[in-house]
Amino acid sequence: MGRTYIVEETVGQYLSNINLQGKTFVSGLLIGQCSSQKDYIILATRTPPKEEQNENLKHQQKAKLDNLDEEWATEHANQVSRMLPGGLLVLGVFIITTLEMGNDCQNALRRLVFAVEKSMNKRRLWNFTEEEISERVTLYICSSTKKIFCRTYDICDPKSSAKPADWKYQNGLSTSWLSLECIVHVNIHIPLSTTSVSYTLEKNTKNGLARWAKQIENGVYLINGQVKDEDGDLLEGQKKSRGNVQATSHSFDVKVLTQLLLNSDHRSTATVQICSGSVNLKGAVKCRAYIHSNKPKVKDAVQAMKRDILNTVADRCEMLFEDLLLNEIPEKKDSEKEFHILPHRVFVPIPGSTVMLCDYKFGDESAEEMRDHFIEMLDHMIQIEDLEIAEEINTACMSYSVNTEASLDNTDDEQPKQPIKATVILKIQQNIGVIAAVAVAVLAAGISFHYFSD
Image (cartoon, rainbow, N blue to C red):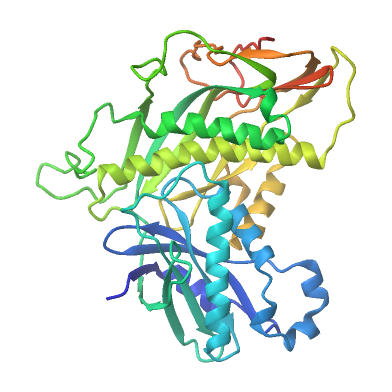
């Protein structure tokens, strides 16, 4: 028996309203959440056309699905995946076309769903567990008859063949989903050893984040101040006295306790390593996750929160490197400083849902630019007043100095004081010849901070 997809009715309305505008086909993404029994689709978004595709519209009228631009579609998926809080994933792809359902359509959908998943998987600091659902959905819609073919593929099996699946609409699907919120203190020191000088700074940073990710994966998670049985019901104890589950949505406060690195498997002495520089991430980030309200398990909620923590830190680093690359800055002299801003998180609600999506804003971006980016990526109208800035901005400083070695346990344990203000300090030291770059990026005002030179 195939998978069942419970789909928000507004998704069906959105797909029905897509106009091909003379094109042979339109492709896009399906966003939602997996569960052991069924999957939920709460949002669909078409892939925006390239400018040259608009210019060559007449040529595309005769094009076949073989001309589907997988690279463009996967880049859209990567951008959208950054905008998803914990618990939400790109679960599949759709194609709306004038062409009849045949081998061409099925092959195009198959190639696309595997390409999208492969591209997104490269960016993740986490891996899917063996117990998780590895099937992803492909949806074919005939633009004239509105006929639908729903199929799934096992993305863990490159030779997987299509399986039929049920596609069922439901009104108000995510109006009562549960939210989890967390402030996570980050204090990561990543030494850049001399043996890894051939790697890019971005790759070295990601390798360091992978080590930190193990701490997050192995942490203890308190939900509303309690350690809950991972196989237990998340809503246990959340019922009214009469025994009826509350109709309003629930929000859970989560706290993360990570283990010290000094345990039976690690010596208590500091390790000194010859380095070309170091990367430091320090501060606190705002994290959110969402989970369906149909008998949700504690372990699923914790897993969603873990992945949001890992995603939001990794995405910010990736975006900073992209921004520095696009706006290449000439080399400064010794002791000169350059100011930067690490992107901070902005949330926006999905109309008719308790779920919020997110994006990242650099300091020089306006609210109008944020709104336009949401509309471009998600193809849904939003209002500027709906933007929720989760973290405030302060300045970031880049200075230049010489640095040749770092201690692996050289970290500062000082934590921000209450009330919590979200701060992230990114210090990048890279010694190329005689110059090392130190970047300090701050996400929130009101916190005193310092950076140290090795």
